[in-house]
Image (tube, rainbow, N blue to C red; front, top):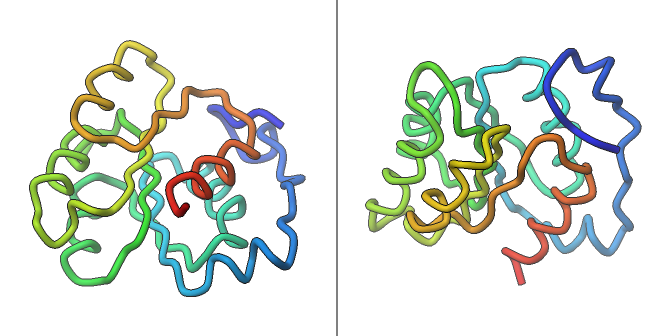
Length: 144
C-alpha cells in the first residue's frame, strides 16, 4: 500500500501487521514521528505502533524539544515542514553527542533532497509515495 499526501482515508489504513516475533523484537523502542501534516502523522503512527512506543511532533523544533527531554531510539521525519524542517532536525541530531547514534529516516516528496540528507547522516530516505512495508524494512535494518 502506498503512503503519500492527502487525507488518511485516501492513504488507506489497512496496515501490514507484524508477527509476534517482530513485536517482541521492538521491546522498549521509542519512535519519534515528525510531520506537520496531521493525516500523515496519524497514518505513520498507526504503521509504527507494532514497532515500539510512538511519540509524535508537528515540527522539527517540537521534535528537538522532545529529544532534549525524552529518550528516543528512532526518528521518522518529513523533510519539508514550516517550523524547523527535517534537514535542520537531522543536523541537530547528528551534532548532538547524546543523540548522534539515533537512526533518522527522512521522508520526502522531493527526491532532490535525498543526496544531501544521506551526506548529513540520514540512515535512509523514503520517497513519497512509499509502501507501508518499507517502514518496517528500514526500521529492522537500522535496528540490526
